Length: 225
Image 1 (cartoon, rainbow, N blue to C red):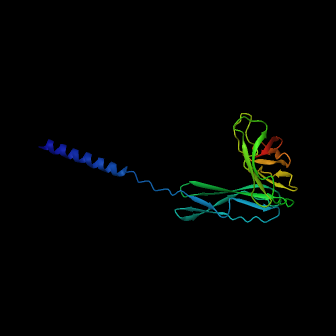
Image 2 (cartoon, rainbow, N blue to C red):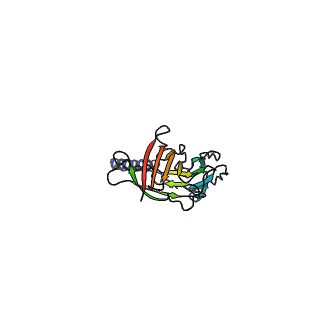
């Protein structure tokens, strides 16, 4: 009889300690993480004339609907024509970050507005020669005195398409100057010219690429469609 009672007592003790162990090692439910969001105040692209004040509009970041701090990086020098990136970031309570960016284009005071500009439109790469599919690009006016190309480069020798956008301005309606974009980095044209021939409808471009750096010129001639 004592043996049976001892066995029952042993079983109860084992069950008690097992239950206590489970309670002690119980995994707490993980708390939810509310990922941060960020939105710019104002436009992603701002175009200003040299010497004009740049109004930093900032951005709004939230976590679970509540405002959190935004860090702004990037300086805009309104006294020097160029393409300037401004970066915005925020971090939530759990260390998750979110980012946004704005591009500010400063064009020189001697840039002119060309009415009924014939250079606008779609182009096909004429030289260097490329097999099909031959690269194409478009040139548009994004403000009264600033132009943008979708891809001034076209493709490389292997005919691999490489997108290199560019911002330009002109002082005479013939030579379109590529605005420096060295601060942006990456595949964007940074300095050079695009010369328009109204007879042949060709745009002869000589330019640099920010990621390659100064000293290396690329040449492309585009035929207006």
